[in-house]
Image (cartoon, rainbow, N blue to C red):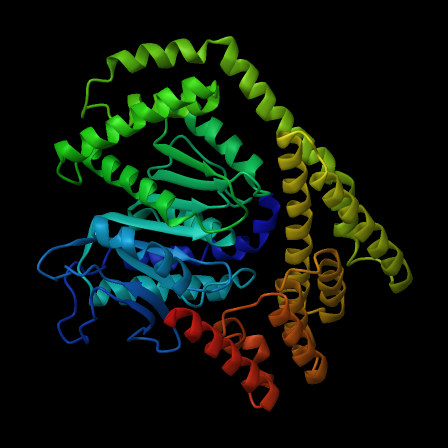
Length: 486
């Protein structure tokens, strides 16, 4: 569903500014800057040059400016900088990575995302000693597209690798065999962007590009920490292979044995595509580090096998089935914001009925593969509606149309807090505090847990002085503190 990344178009030229500053980026930290604590998550580190910008940060416990360190710059689509840092701090500690994640970069705000990337880049290069050969960018959903855009457009940044979660390249940029960075991707089997990542995998495989795709059972989300750990190990391996990190024989042997085990498991399960990924990794990722000759023969035989051709055909059929399941309703969703009020009411009912029927069909599907296709199709329509509403609210400034989208999705998924939170934003921007507060209560009832979700939401700023708003924030904080104390 790469069309959802169209808001990135305005971001591309802005990254050229970052490219200009990359050439003069410091490799030694500014001795006058305040030292940063190591071994703990910093939720908000304010930029020295621009205190309106901040990012979440994790420095490994052993961090010292006496040597250079690799860094991962992260982008969350909702500006939740602390989320990936808290999720992946243990892996960062294990492999001695610095994690830096923007608290400002957000979907549908191209100028804000560009300024946030620039500020985070400049501040970390000012205050930390970074390894220019091991700079990585990472993101989830729209944030993955920001990270990929940065890696492509900022050639002088020398990005060593992109780590994407739940999305890939933006619609305005295509993968190329000349892309100079490694690409690590994570995708859940229920993620609506699953087709996109399968197609990206095929292209990267055809080019023999440095690429790793890790799939798992899950939705559209940041990848589970244990799988991120596996991905980070792959990045370590690639750094050793390219000579930017000294080879660790024990580490290489351990990872080689694990990949062999993956290949053997794929053979036993008769999963030809997983087998292809494992053999490809054994050949391309360990070349120059291990004897890969035996696996070159196995990889060549597999590529010409009937089993692989059948598996790829089945995969393509699943991609086509998802498209077919969404095509008609997707077209209607796109029309929803362009028709008059009378037609809008009828169209909204048609879409709601169609999405509900699709969801019911998925729940009752006996075949697991068919069920996954239908779940992805429903999620794709849901995401399209959410992003259409956000675009109406934040880009087009048509709050009444945004309200239609959010009300539709709130009714289709009565257990989801996000559409109701977006309704709260919409009503707050319309000046209807009473309805906005009611929406927030409903979002909390549906499972909204993070007090930061409402306390730091700029669109809810007009509610901050309301006693009911303050009470909700206090309740969420009390619940969080109670859970942490257990």
